[in-house]
Length: 134
Image: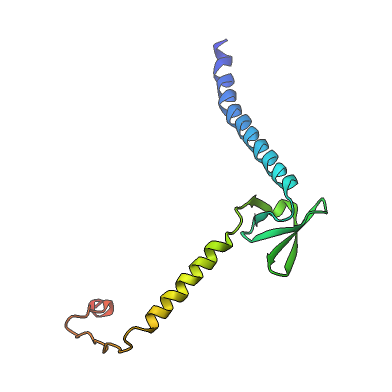
């Protein structure tokens, strides 16, 4: 009986991580299939290569059309869609652009004199590394 205990214990130590790993992998595959089947037009997605776009057409079972820029539609395999992402908020972008324009206008009204360039003295400059190698 003692002769069987050690081999049986070793088999359990190896088998348990394998079983747990396959369960985790099956769960991930199920989640990915659920995501791919739930895609609809207008969803903002990211592909496995990191490309962001908006789903334009989902009529085909194996492919999906993604609009990556206004008027630019590309065809991808459904499996290439990695995840759904939150849609861009256009209002925040417009607000940020307006702030930049206002800042630029304020900067234009400031004094336009340029400070003279200050040259570093050779005494205060850091020595080059090549001069130390001898």
